[in-house]
Each structure stands twice: as structure tokens, then as C-alpha cells.
Picture 1: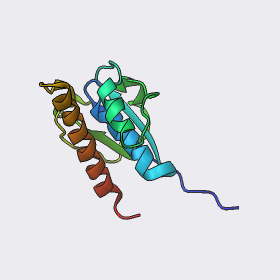
Picture 2: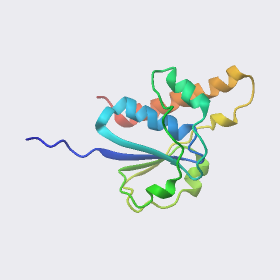
Picture 3: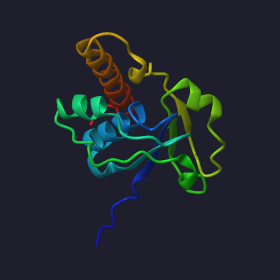
Amino acid sequence: MHTPPPRARVLFICTHNSARSQMAEGWLRHLAGDRFEVHSAGTHATFVHPLAVQVMAAVGIDISAQQSKTLDRYLDQPWDYVITVCDSANETCPYFPGGKRRLHWSFPDPTQADGTAEERLAAFRMVRDAIRQRLADLLGPR
């Protein structure tokens, strides 16, 4: 009987765990299927931003059931990748003793976008697409 290899564990971290880390979590689950165990957390928990849910739904990914969590629950766990997706989280992120590889991807905060509803939505779309590209680069060809 063949035992599948263990799934790599990935933790995405952002300040509020409301947009960038949530979109990254949704994207990796979508792009890599069951190859990874994926989680996201924030240095502070808030809520999953409705515009993040909306722009992900527009590309067929439902993140509406995801919840904003603080990273303290994940500190003592083993991780293949700990990926910060905002500069603030990168600066304040604690050391993860079980983290094999730490990456930092700087994405602008779409929740800080000003302007019309369409301009704010465009900011979320831009970050969504940049995260997808970064993950596609990390995963490489199938």
C-alpha cells in the first residue's frame, strides 16, 4: 500500500489577517490542491474583509468561511514555509522555531486604498493577482 508523502505546511502572516494573508491562503489551496496544508494568521485578528471575499469569488475561490486568527496559536507548530505578506508583519513577526523556511512578500495593503468603490475594488484585484503570480512562481510548473 502506497502512503502519500506528508503535505508541506504553509503559514501566511499579515498584520490583521483580513485581506492579503486570507487571499494567499485561498489561492494556495486552489492552485496546489492537497499538496499543502495552508493556514493564515495575523499579529492582530480582525475579520476577513468583504472586498477580499468578493474579488476571490470573482475568480471562483470561496474564502467566505475563512476566519481571522492570531498567530500565537501557530508558534509551536512545525512549518515548511512561514510567509509574511506585509512589511509590518515582517518587522513584528516572532521567531518560529519550527519554521524551515521564512519568506517575505511585500504587497500593498488594499484595505488602505482610497477613492471610489470601483477604485478600492481595483486595489484588491491588483493585490489578488500579484499574490497569485507569486504563488505560481513558487509552485513552478505542475
